[in-house]
Amino acid sequence: MDRITHTQKIRHSPVKTSSYVKQNTQLRFRPSSQDILVSQIASSASLVTRIKPRNLQLSSTEVVLRGSDRFWIETELLSQQKLDFYTANGVTHLQPTDDTVKADLKLVLDSKEHSHQRNLYFYETATQDDEIRAQVDIQDTAITNPIFEIAAQTQWLKSFDAQCIDNWLTHTKGLFNKKQMQRVALVANSTELTLKHWWLGTGQGYERAHTTLFSGSATSTLHADEPQFECSPKDLSTVFSILPQMPLTSPQVHITANAHVMKINYSTDIADYETFIPAINDAGEADATAFKIYGGANG
Image 1: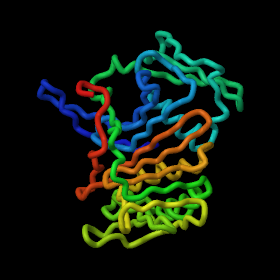
Image 2: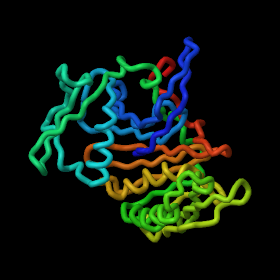
Image 3: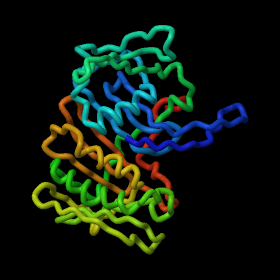
Image 4: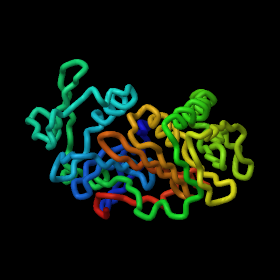
């Protein structure tokens, strides 16, 4: 999950004024589709994850998780692999909050590790402004015409993280905003996946590359000659540095890419997941072709 925030100017209509809305990541429970949508607001394309929990009915109305609680889930539960240490003790519905908290509903979690409780707070989307209520979602036809597909076991994901993602991070040395670091490319063939980085410019390609062999722990299906998917390195590292740490139960993680988006399917004991990484276009912006806006005035 992306913890990097940006600021974008949003014009309010019909009033001829403008304000700044941060491109924060928002976690939204949608009872109509029985899923959780995690993506950015104030954006036309972003990293998107759809989560289908098993046996979970939080609320009869749409709600979004408070930003500080989402950050806690990222840094405490996921990054430190403590998801199994917390339980809702059979509670399947959110509870009303008292007047001392600026939130509508809460979920109380019990820690099996430290014997204490942690409240997660939610806001009803109906009470939010349009600019905050609208967030990025994926189109149903997003993944047509794939250029490559990969079926990978957890061991291969760990190798890819160590050999490609970690090596890329070592070479960045904090230079995330340099032009050369604005994009990376994934190139698949029948035996390996290569991560190319340090972009030299249009028509010049990449200077550096790291490769992970499939070696029996992954297989590829190619639908084009030398298929290449280009995207933001921040999006790619966010997904593939977390995946090997998750308690995956699916035998394989399925990775499918086309010209506009990459889709990653995986499962745990508590949910099924679909994560979508937008491609990057010639202008260096996230490709919005496969995405749509959910919620807000027009969603």
